[in-house]
Structure formats: structure tokens, C-alpha cells
Image (cartoon, rainbow, N blue to C red; front, side, top):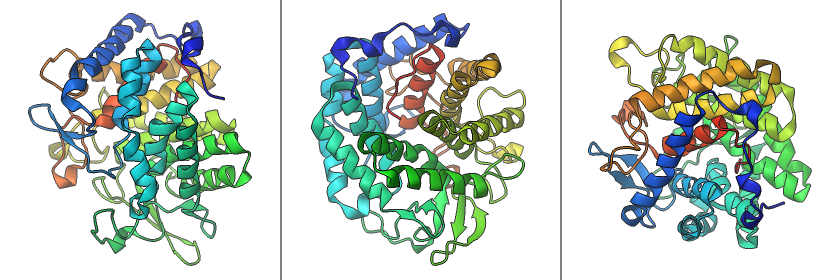
Length: 396
């Protein structure tokens, strides 16, 4: 059922058992995030940030970019925290972006979950808006259509991109770590409708990813290929990591958060165990670092930090703590360490010239995008801060 913001269900006091000992620092940081959103709204307008420039301004998304929802997601979080209708109006004014995705077949890929969980499920949960619910359910049906029962996975990309570029290498038989974040839309749709095929597809993909993306040593491939006809597993590769055998930190973080979220949605302890093992491995690979390297296997002269990986992982780690009372302290400490690294070395919320919140994000190192603000880093930074303070109601 949707949450009525007038009923203050989103503003209940945080549960003391989940509150970090760094609560004051984190509370001040989330308030700065909300202030940053207020300050930048007249500059950003209806545009959706894509990647930061050297001067910490934004370049903006084309209509069907996978990151179009992260500004909306931040605005919905700010509404949750404040009840201020300016955030509601700014978030809902982006609805035409999501209508356009539903109307454009080539714009629809595995990232429908990112887009519609933060763009429309959030609206439904916060306000009970029926149009947003209907749009999110339509997106879930389109995501379900990408499920390949012969291999039990959701196909990631399309051969033809929305603006006409053809890349057959991405077309058939491929899963990627990022898709674990998109399963939440299917689990939500299952809860809304009772349709078993939503849950069946989400669980099928989660189990296939656990079998083939997660290696025996609890590191991960970014992508894995299957025979598109038979579904037989072929090989692991990378798209954004250092090489096929390495461990791309944001991919590992997507899996940590995705399995922790899937465990919350389903109660499946195998998913929680996967999140726990992946997080423990990432913690070990980080060594003394407080912000992850962009790839844990990149040689020293190729190391860039990725604040977005740290933010995604921190939010996931706090979810693990929420579900594992006997180990909660251990996982909260790791989450606090990750947030501490972001606050110490990447925080832009006190910089009046910066339009975003976190520096030092590594969008795609091989393409030259290695030190930028990233809107998804900013969204997960807010989510992680809120989770550290005991908030448990989100849009995933």
C-alpha cells in the first residue's frame, strides 16, 4: 500500500538499534544534501544530470539515458525527509521522461528498474498517485518480457540503442551485475498484483547471477554470456572493469546492494548470505582504503577511486546490518567506514560552486571518465546516510 506523506509514516523516529555512533555527523551531512538540492534546483530545472565536469557542473542526460531517474530519486528522498511540496513538484514534473521511455521500444532495456523504481514507484509509495503506479506496472511488464527462461536470466542490453547506434556485441545472451538493482521493480510488481511470473523471473535471474557472476572467491564478473538459443553458460567478461578476470568495484557493489535488497523483498536467506559474502570480500580487497578503487585488480598506476561504488556499497551494507542482528555492529562499522571515506575525501555538499554532492566518481575509466560527480553516486550517498540513521522505507 502507498504511504501517505500527510500521515507522517515516513517521518517516524529512527530505530535506536540501527543508529550509527556517527549519527550527528551523518545527520548534518543528509541535511546538507537536502540544502544542496534546494540550491541547485533553479540551475538544473527539468534536466537530469548525467556526469560532472571538471568544474563540478553537470552535463545532462539524453531522453532515454539509464541515469534519468537519479535526480528524481534524490528529490523523492528529500520529500520523505522534509515533506516540502517543492520536492514533490520537482520530482513529478519529470514524469514526461518516463512516459517517453514507455512509448519508445528501443529505450527499454534492463535499466527499467532503475528508472521506474525511482521515478514512479516512489511517487506511488509516497503519494498514492494511480498514474505512477500504472506506469511502474507497465515498466515491470516490459522488464518481464526480457526474461529468457532457457537460461533463467534477464537480457541486459539491446542490439540497437535508442538513438540508432548498433552494437551486436551487447545484444543476445548477456547479463550484467547492474541488473540486480532492477529486480526490485519485479518484486514490487509481484506484491502489487500477485502475479507469480514477476517473482519467478526475479528469482530466476538472482539465482543465475549468483551461480555465474559471483566467483568461488566471492569476487564478481561484471558480465556473463550465455548461448542465446540454449541458455548454456559460456564465459564471464567485463565491460567497465580492468579486465575479464578482475573485480570492478561498482559491479561488486551493485551485487551487494541488489542481493541485500532482494533478501528484504523475499526473506530468502541465500540472497542475504550472498550479500554478506560479497561485502566481506570487498572489505578485504579494500585493505586500508576508505573509498574503493574503481577496480580491485587495477595496478597502482591505473588506480582511480570510485565514490559511487563506495556509496552503493555503504547503502547495501547497512541493509545487511538491518537483517542480521547478531552481526549488525560489524556491518554498521563497515558502512560507517565507507561513509567516513566519502565525507572525508569526496564530499562537495559544502562547496557552493558544485552542483552535485560527491567528487571522484569513476563512470567508465576505459572511456576516460575517471574522476567525476555522478548522479547515482549522489543518490546512493543520500540513501546510505539515511539508512545509517535508521530509515528503512525506500523505493526499492
